[in-house]
Length: 300
Image (cartoon, rainbow, N blue to C red; front, side, top):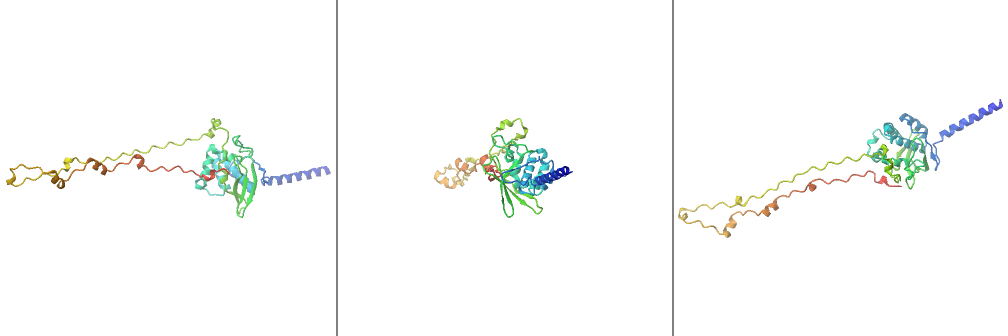
């Protein structure tokens, strides 16, 4: 009897210890890694996990990366969009917000997914940041508590210094990510050549569509000056009958000059003609493409 009672007591103690360890699993000390339980299957599963994990700043960051890795999969993107909206405490139209343009562009570009994979423990530029989204760990180094928010520092194997994530505890008691800029800032490129992924459709990058050539602008036809005959002075009227018999003597050049309108030389007429501008001059200058998020691309 005493032996059976002893075994029951030990079993209860082990059960209690297991519950305590499970509840504290995500309260990670600096320098330790947060464990992974596999990615959430859907939005409802994600919310259920947040109720257990987002009670600490580190747990909120872990749930954020779960949502990110779900979003990298196009087949799960609709549910992952709800996950990111929830953990970032933003509104329904967050994907149309200019604030998240660079973040979304890098989430949807398979050639840049290594930025997010670099936060998984065990990755490196040398191994191409290889990791399994269903079994990854985050390494937290420290956190800085402020009055309205907390900065959580974690390792990125492609960065020279720790990256920061700003989190905030809301009145519901849970922590949410309020600034994720460091999580999609550029890191060192993977050493593995892109040619090694030529068989993988996930690494295909669609080439930009060629731009249509500018429409041809026909040059305006210059007005040609009229010939000298059309601007010649009118013929002199015959004089009275007394002088009709005498042949008309042509007026000297000196006297005819001021009274008659002289035709303009060809070079003067061409100088007055408006010269057509070239096609390049008539077209508006093409503005260089805006580089979104140049400050965010710096390596910390």
